[in-house]
Image (tube, rainbow, N blue to C red):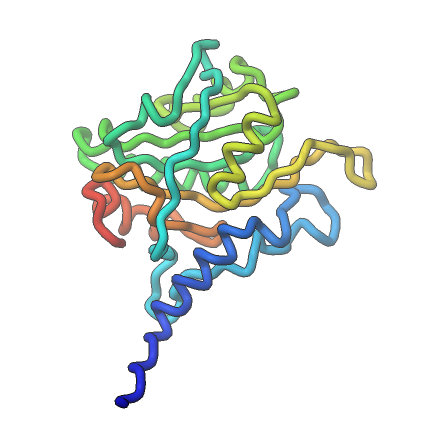
Length: 227
């Protein structure tokens, strides 16, 4: 009997990433919390850094979460229905975050502006709040207007939001006061890219992804290709 061929390191890393993500985040980020947990990674999930890529292409893509929330206009927004067949970037965060959340969204906004107008119109970017008590539709709309007015902001019942995030292995916790009395939201910081071909979440970005990374990758994501 001939010996089995060894698995490639890249394939092993992708499978490990999917497995770890699917079992939920091991540690969370408190954006601007000012405590020792603030700088910890969401989970031990890494991209293929030796290839110079910020993206992790998952061997087992995620199904788009069944999320029905409220948009910045106060209207019902069914995530699956509204983004069906469209390239979509999904992120869970909150508007009072002073660091990771605005940086992530602005990085994506910069990359989007580098696209031709027709491609800008194709891309869906959805920001789901992890702090719905403070992030009302009006607050979300005001905050996103300063990033990109075409980004979609969603809020609603925390339990519904948390359940939707869990479908992607992203862990979030109810907002609470830190030791300094500041309200913080503990949440995973992954950006999930969904393919327009089959609506599956097949690419993962961590908080270290830069505007340059998104600028390079989004043209491929628009076509459902691997970055």
